[in-house]
Structure formats: C-alpha cells, structure tokens
Length: 451
Picture (cartoon, rainbow, N blue to C red):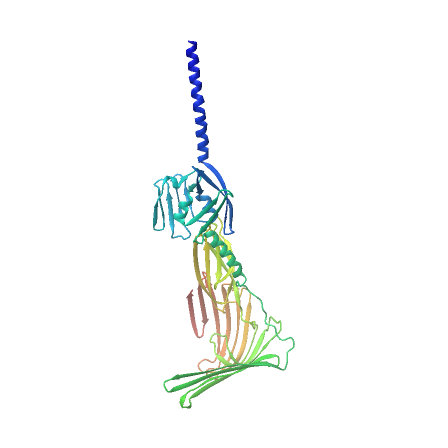
C-alpha cells in the first residue's frame, strides 16, 4: 500500500514536472508572437512620431490607423467588421481592406488577402509592409537595430500637400488684396508753369487699295498750379476725307479740403441723370483719386467641421479661417469697385477638397457708408450746343444702398425747365444689383443685374 502511494505521488509530480515547463514555454511563445515594438517614424521632415508595430512569428506588422493618421490619409477602421476603408490621396480613389472576407480593392484594382497579411487588434488593423507596398505603393523599410521606420512613395501624400499649401500661402499673402493708401499729394510748391508730357499714337490700316490713318495726341503740363491737358484725335482717309476733334481741360485739386476737393474747366463730362459731353466747369468734393474699396463683404457659410477655408478675391489670397465643430465659418473681406470674383478653396483634414466661386459687380455709383458727395456744373453741350446746368448729391446710406438726388436744367426747345431726379442703387442678396431712376417729368426706369 505504501509502495502504491509512493508510486502514485511520483507519477503525479512527474506529470506536473513535465507539463509546467511546456505551459510556461507556450506562454512565453505566445507573448513573443504579440510583441509590441516601438519604431521612430519620420517622413519628409514633416512627420516625426513613434509607431507601435507588432512582431508575430518574427514578421513585422504596421498599424494602419497610426500611420494613416500621421500621413493625413483618409481612413475609417471598423473593428467589428474587421475592415478599413476610405480614399487614398484622391476622393475618387476609394479603397477597402476586409479581413473577414480576405478581400481588398483600391480604385479598379482588387486583391486577395491571406491570413498572414495582417490581423485585427482591439483598436487597430495591422498590415505587413508588403501589403502597404502592393495596395498603396507605400514602401516602408524598417531598421531593427535603430528601431526606425522610413517611407518612400510616388504619390504626394496629404500631409505633404498641406505643407506645400502653407508655404505657398505665405508667399501669396504678401500680395494679398488690401487697401493700401497712396494719397494724391499735390506739389509742395505750386508753380506757374512746370513739367510736361506728350502721349501719342498713329495707326495705319489698309483694305485693298484703300489706306486709312488714325491719330491720337495728348499732352499735359502744370499751369497755375493745376494740371492742364490738350489733346486731338482724328482720322485721314483716301480722297482727302478727314475728321478730328480737340479736347482742352484744366483741373485744380485743393489741398486737404473735404468740402471742395477739385474743380475743372474745359471739355468735361457730366455725371447727371443724362450724362453728356459739355464745355464748361464743375466743382465737386469727389476725391481726385479713383476709389479702390467700397466696403467689406461678409462671407457667412458652412462646410464640413474643422475644414480649412482659403478665401480669394480675383485670385489673390485675402483671408484664411477654419470652420468650427458645426462647420460654420465667417470672414470679412475688402470689396473693390468693379467686377470681382470671390472664390473659396476648402480643405479637409485628410486631403478632401472643394471649391466655390461667385462674381460680384460693384459699380462706382455705390458710396461707402456715411460718405456724402456732390457735384455742381454747367456749360454748353458739345453735341447740340445747348446750355446745361446741374447739381446733385449722393449719400452712402449703407454699404449696399446709395441714394442720389439732383436737378438738371437745359434750354433745349423741347424741354425748357428743371428736371428733378432721384437715383437709387441697391445690392440685394449679395449678388443682385438693382438700379431705380425716377425723373417725374421725364421718365422712370429700373434695372436688375444678377451676377
């Protein structure tokens, strides 16, 4: 009996002596299969991060989520479905890697996956470097001694595109549209006679045996402290046929006077309800320089959350912002007179891109908010030699509404009385221009322009 028990104990402990080393060896082997290895990953001097790779059976596997996040490549990982999908570099280049069906596709290419090509962990999907290379043309090389990871690819990845865009943006912002004040400076000492310039052109055209000539000569100089202009335009045709016209004008700009900024005599052009060329005079508080900016234009739009938005006016970068968590963004931009193309470029965090544009027309009939201008003039019309006189005033009520009132007189036989008029300029809904002219004794007219 004692011998039996001794034999039983020896057999029992011998079993555990044999099993335990095998068990611990299996545990050690299992841990070696799922060993985590930390690699230093650098790319193009832009990405500098640590990647948690896995070693299984001495094979290296790289995390899709960590790498694609560092490279700003669009991706969505679904652990339950055992797949990762998104678009690679371009939004039309869709991809999916499915470890449930062992299938992969990118664009129009398809691949069959094997179990050894990767696996799904609790929080990421791991792929062998060979799959990154064959599916995405991302060639990863690991250095096990330095524990470093390098990447080469033929594609321009989103993280590089973003840096290139930022560098180019820094260059572009130096020439961005802004109101640069270069005020008209009258000569410190006005002179009786000073300076002079001549601008001329001569053109010849021939059709068959016929030759025509046109010419245009314009000269200018300072006289009595003002700018004097003398010009002549005409043409000469075969058989001695010719025609010409002359212009002469003298303008004086007043120094730092908001109530009277300039006056002129000579060949002029009226800014009344019925503009016409006339020989006479005018006085005005309009600036001698052409206005550049009329107001600020408000961009209040939505895009996708946290997207970056660049705003351009006539291809000049003027503002940059980032949409909030709801996708809303708002920017104020300077709006110049004339026709402007306002466009946006919107960039998503993983290479998405959208653009939009709108054309805005701002006529010079619009005044900045609070500005008041007036003009008084009179003389003889060039076309029919009738006496004309006019006075008008305009007020910039808001940035999008200007009202102008005035009275115009002519001694034309068909209308020997004063003509009272009102002209309203309105910008509605940002892109529509409305002009309404009312002269109760003559006509009413309106115009709608959609830009």
